[in-house]
Length: 370
Ligand code: NAD
Ligand code: GLY
Image (cartoon, rainbow, N blue to C red; front, top):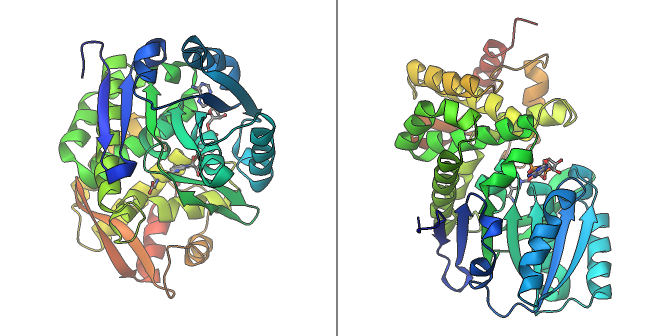
């Protein structure tokens, strides 16, 4: 951390390396931020209808004060904007505002804007530079880092895209103050995930700072976001394009979560909420398989619950969840594979779990209070 309270994490990927700057009120530290970017002649800022009114002026001014031309494009907030129709509108608009390889696409918003604007940057003129300014907790600890960009097809989420690393990521944790509380808590599920899959000390830190997390203490937030970015960077550096399987550890809880999200039409649970339920199910499955102590599963459940996250399945039958899991793109040749914990801080890929085991865990994880 430097004297102005800004922490920097470097993602080391050879010529595609980039810094992630994390601070409270980072966007107020204007010129120092731009000093790190090379040859910016034009900033093409893409944001959404919730984030734009809050932060677009502040971000535009960073560039304008340095004499950089800015143009901005606002998409409607929400997952529906993450499609090819929006991408095409953005490509045409970028042509109209004369974007070229000297331009920077600036993704200002949550994961939807990050993925969509990132996809536009990766594809327009075969690639223009990308700056991520994530404003949701999920985007700050996950989607803005690692270079996965893309859009949804009507029948499949995140189906068209690229690995396209940004030139820099600017994370201002003070933007989380305007994020709806439910979205913030949902992002905390991904934070807990990093502790379970990679770092037991971090998990303990989270247990000790539940009240600070709920109160959005700025120093704790900078520290937590920094650790998450560092942990993600370590994985991405070793398996940038998800070839060796290492990057798949980030999918802990996601096989259950995707089935729950799909079956509830993506409108009952936010992604992080479904991931919290998915992590609770995955831990219980690991207990069933005799590879994870029950008391650690309970520790994970206690932390998730204390962060007001759900940990039980509501009203979805086991056979429906299993059917949906079998259609998941992570299922290979009909074999159910899961990322499962062996202790807090370590997960392994278990390649062939029986349907019966999964079904009985789903039955056990039903919310019977309903
Ligand atoms: P989102 O972008 O829809 O943001 C959630 C909501 O919060 C939106 O209504 C948004 O307008 C609003 N918002 C964001 N920041 C705000 C702020 N500071 N103040 C007020 N409102 C704010 O959703 P998300 O949860 O950020 O991201 C979900 C998307 O991320 C999904 O499309 C998912 O597929 C993608 N994702 C991508 C990766 C990756 O590696 N690329 C990883 C995880 C998730
Ligand atoms: N969010 C999963 C990944 O970046 O690989």
